[in-house]
Length: 130
Image (tube, rainbow, N blue to C red; front, top):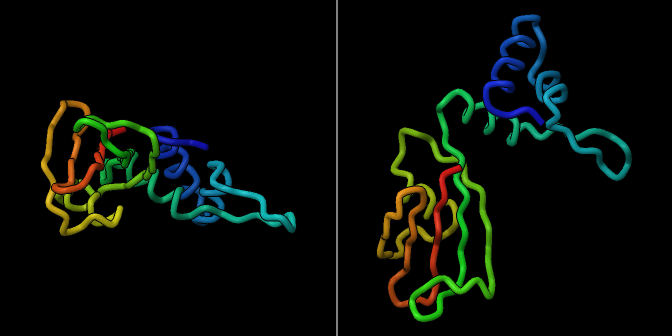
């Protein structure tokens, strides 16, 4: 699958030749094969990556895990990949996408990642910009 500047160049070239969205997504590798042998084009993944390449969205990896002694323990882990529009508040948008909207959290900015600790819960949410 193409990503980044290669995807953007591919999209521009195919669209200049009059290609459809289905053609550009298929040629970029955003296709899965169903059980019956037919193709399923993954438009959501394609357009999300295209918007990241255009600078309109950011890709974020979110890790939710338990804590022990206030530190992430990783005895269980849930991973999410969230695409965040650049014109939105990223923390609020991510909390809404993972189902934690309205939950009060203590925020710790660690430079390349942010850790949220919901108050009264033994959970840590680690947000890592990719």
